[in-house]
Image (cartoon, rainbow, N blue to C red; front, side):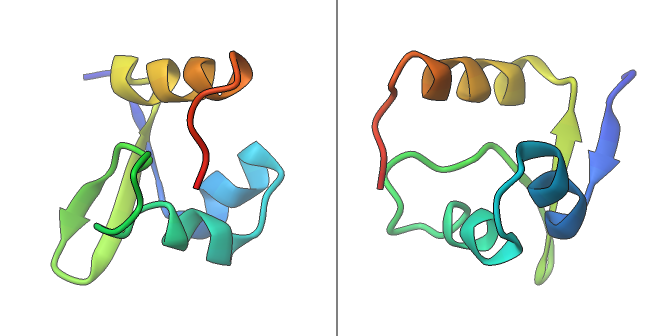
Length: 66
């Protein structure tokens, strides 16, 4: 596994969005969740993973939005 594990703040900076938006996009009621790992109450993101890369690519193509 050669993925960099990021927290919400770090992912928000890389995507140039707010941290609250990142958190909202991990909630169950969101139809287009950002792929993430759950460690209790903590959310982490595997930067460079195929799942996250695919999610980002779908957003570029105009994927579903909340």
